[in-house]
Each structure stands twice: as structure tokens, then as C-alpha cells.
Amino acid sequence: MKIDRLIGILSILLQKDQVTAPELARTFEVSRRTISRDIDTLCQAGIPLRTSQGKNGGISIMAGYRIDRALLTSGDMQAILAGLRSLDSVSGTRRYAQLMEKMQAGASHMLPGDNHILIDLASWYKASLAEKIEIIHGAIDARRRVRFHYASPTGESDREIEPYFLIFQWSSWYVWGWCAQRAAMRLFKLNRMTALAVAGPYTPRPVDMPDLSNERVFPEHYRVTARVSGAYKWRLIEEYGDASFTVQSDGSCLFTHGFTDRDSIMSWLLSFQGEAELLEPRALRQELIKIGEKIAAAHQS
Image 1 (tube, rainbow, N blue to C red):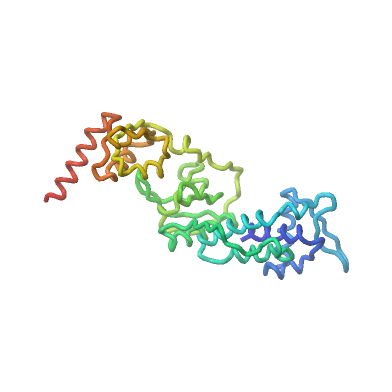
Image 2 (cartoon, rainbow, N blue to C red; image 1 turned 60 degrees about the vertical axis):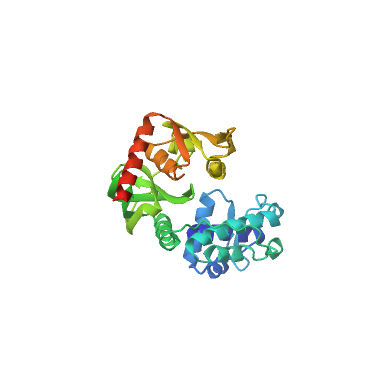
């Protein structure tokens, strides 16, 4: 991927006084023309690179702008390595580990090789998810649209988007892109996509990263108060923090928190298997009773 090469090229230039285009082409297994385009991209990004021709020519970072290599300590490099390993956990490959091996050329003392931090960004759906990430990542790199069938709580539809960002948030993977059907930027969950395919090219438009704050994505429409059995105290701490409830004299937990929609409230309460009582909003208590009656009727038959 292009971004991988750019990081690798920049790392090599920070470690060496000068390097030639053929050397970079061999290192990253691409053509000299590709390396020339990468150098142009780095220059446009504000990296002050200098190229010189002739027998002793090559590519280097301009004098006076070089970053002190000591700024990247062993701890810094270990943090980078942990991040790269986490991306390999998604793709199911060693692409990013191999990139790190290239980055440490000439600076092996920075990587003692310890593995104290392991990050796995894969999900239960790793087999299908890795392929989707690869397809969308490649489409973003090549500036090509993607089309897919999408299933959501509001229904199913066929979509075609201009993908701009792959995002890992709330323990799931999403793509942020311009949706042709909605004529606006939209966030799509990869696990809800089927029949994903690459479509035609698109001209990039200026876009901003989405506002993924909890207040924006999960606005509070319901204020829930519930009495939960003390046996589930651990769940309240894990899911909402120990400030979300107070322990009562009988050992139960009086829970208060905001929810976005009715369905989330119902599924959350039912997951306690009768060990949680909804106190507020009272209007939903009758709905909860009806759900319980439907479950009882279905299983009694």
C-alpha cells in the first residue's frame, strides 16, 4: 500500500544521509517511476526533500530540517511496532511487520524485540472482515468507488460510495464515504455489508473526518433508571463505569444512564434474565411487559 511505502521511505531518509531511487525501488519492490511519485507526494506533504543528479547523487532531507534520530527512542519504536502488529491482526498478513523490519534497517538497536504489548483489532468475523478491509483499503488507495448491499435497523439497500477513511471505533470497523444515494457523507459498518465490489474511479472531494463523539453518534433520547441485581455489578462497571450506579442497602445497584433508542433499552434489560427492573421511563414498562408476554407465549406453545 502507498501509505506503507511513504512511512518506510521517510524512515530510511531519517536514518541515512542519502539514498538513491534505485535502492528505494529495490527495497520496496516497485518501479523507479513509483518511487518518484512517492517522493513528490512527500514533498507536497511538506517534507523538505532534496534530489541531486550524478555519480554521487541521490535523495536526502534538506540540511537544517533533519529530525534528530534520537527523538525516536526505543520506547517510541516499540509503540509503533505494537500499532503495526495490531493492523496485521486485522489483515491476517505480516505486511506491517515486514514494513517495520524495513523501517528498522540501520537502527536495530532501537528494537530489542520484546513483545509486551499485543493488540488484536480482529473480530469474531475476522475471515470475512479482513477481505472487506483489504478491498476498501485498496479502493481508497486507487480512488475507486465501492458498491455493496447494506443491512441496517431501518432496512436493506444497495449503496455505492466514494470511500475516504477506514475507521476502527466502538470495537467495530467502519468506512466513511460519500454516498451517491444520499448525496452526503455517511458511515457504514463493515459487518453489515455483503456483495462488496470495487466500482469505477472517482475524483476526490474535500472531506473532513466524521464527528465520532458519543454525544454526536449516540445522542441521549432516554434517561433510564433501573434496579439491577448486585450479581451484575461487574457488568455495570465494565459497560458504563462505576459512576453509573449506587449500591443500595439490599446489595442491588440503582443504575442511571442515557440511551439513544428504545430497542437498545429493551435488549439491554432483557439480557439480565429478569434480574433488572426498569423504573424510568415508566412509559416503557408496559412495553417490556408485552415483550415478556410474547416470549412466554412463544415458549409455552
